[in-house]
Image 1: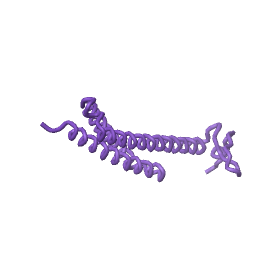
Image 2: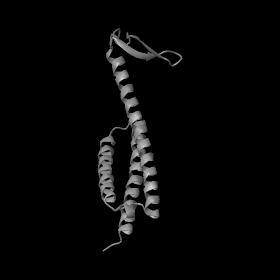
Image 3: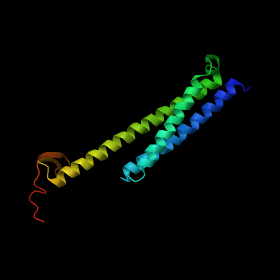
Image 4: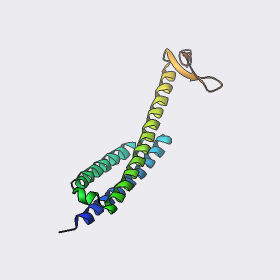
Amino acid sequence: MADPKVLCAHKLNQQAEQLDELALLLDEELNSLASRNGDGLKDLARNKLNLLNAIQRLDKEIAAFSAEVLNSEEITASIAAIRKKLADCQQKNEVNAHAARQAHLSVQQLKSILIGAPTSVTYDQGGSVVTGESGLVRNLKA
């Protein structure tokens, strides 16, 4: 039978690799959002979900080890490193969510302007947001 510490360390290494892969995926997702390239976002979201499920499965397997194994010095160091990677991934995911919300708002505002919504958002010469009656499209004769 394999040594529980070695087995736990192996699972932690797998989880660390998956978190590294997730971080790269999140970077790719942000690049797609920033370049407004929506083609790959569905695949990225699917890959992200699969990776998160794999990370959660490993986490459950790791949690099943005894407290003695999990509290050993080398294991606690690995766990601390994994928690740091997880926090970094969570931060990247929050940034991506904010970028996605901003992109969605921009599209909605542009749509409102183009369809001539009664009240739409535009910008003045100083770049400040101005809300008011939209005559941009209503008075268009083409």
